[in-house]
Amino acid sequence: MRKQITLLCMMAFLSSLHVTAQSFRKYIDAKPELSASNGVAYPTPSGKLPPPPAGYVPVYISHYGRHGSRYLLSGQDYTRPLQV
Image 1 (cartoon, rainbow, N blue to C red):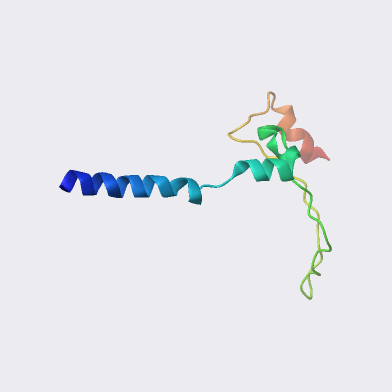
Image 2 (tube, rainbow, N blue to C red):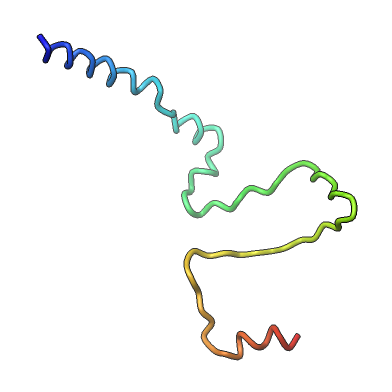
């Protein structure tokens, strides 16, 4: 009897999983350009940005980051930006 109750509870739980799962198909159908895995560029922000607080000036910083450490090949590559 205990095995039957446990089995019944497991079946009820497992049958409810598909109801709560995310439907990836509707997201891909809505925006197929986002289904390209790692080849997708970050979306650009849309709309107007809020003004900076009083006394501050907005600046633009461009950064192309990579995973992990990358070292330049020669020492001149490190000193050349300092000469500018």
